Image: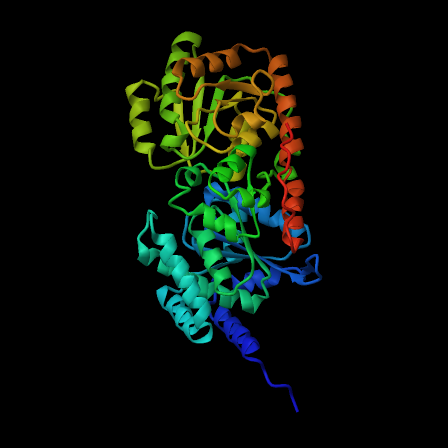
Length: 455
């Protein structure tokens, strides 16, 4: 006579049936790629779920690199996203990742609300606690209560998926709604969670995002640089500081393995990033206009797209830069690499940042960087050694730095490029950073200590 199926096992089987019914949401592709689970420090099988609001995304290639590197550490990873199944992606690897991702809202609101109703029957006390937490998180938030109740419903959907797949830990990226959904799933009885904070928006909105609560309930929190970690110290209780760990964004070896040592002969600069107020492209155009008047013919490429494109195009026209400055729109990772290699230097005049990944990419490709004394940037870029650091918002200083780059000899720029490559590879190799994450995932208890920053 067969053993009777427990309610929990029955729920997991039913959840798997519902996941299978999602068809092209990524479940079948994920099942084909997922390796066998390894174990945590206590011997429990370890399978991690990554949760992102939108994945994949053109500007989030660093998340894809991290996931693949964690899998190389022997940890199976299931991808989950709230949305993003119809977002524009231009990279072949992102297209593959989209096939492997399960989307919470792809089936519409009805499946999510049905999961909420099932939780009301199966775990009423936990649901009440999670609902109370969602109401609390809505107070002072940028978004009203209905949004937070929807996050609760999404969490109900996710814990069924986590049960079905045997997920033992959830890792979210960004301290926004994805971290809140992971936290609510944990309150509902789901697995422990962690999240990575990048900034700078999370720093500005830390109180409204209730970062203190998210950090307090998390197993650990990853900060991508020391500046980021310091901002999280400001937004959390002192007793939680020890669980905030430094885990840098990383670069794949394939990205820089065949980097050309020589600089191009042309007088070309490239700025890579979203066309938005934080990146300072309008200041860059003013500085570039001055540079053209003083230094003669040169070219500026703005690689990216965004909400300020029309305004930037108007300014290009008004300054008479139509033949000297171009906008590419969104381009693939390979095209970003080609643009950086074709340039004399990367220019990024940001007003506000954490530490842009494109700075790491340019340095790995032996290109000096002209950028600003902002946030975590000086932790990596050394003025006069690996590039030029200028005050944010200073048109004159930016123009002078670009002129100095044009005037520098090939030998000087080559030495800068070599120093930049050595520094970034030593601090931002993706497999080394993934190993830090893998160890944190495996630990049942996180050591309560503040790590030293290595300069």
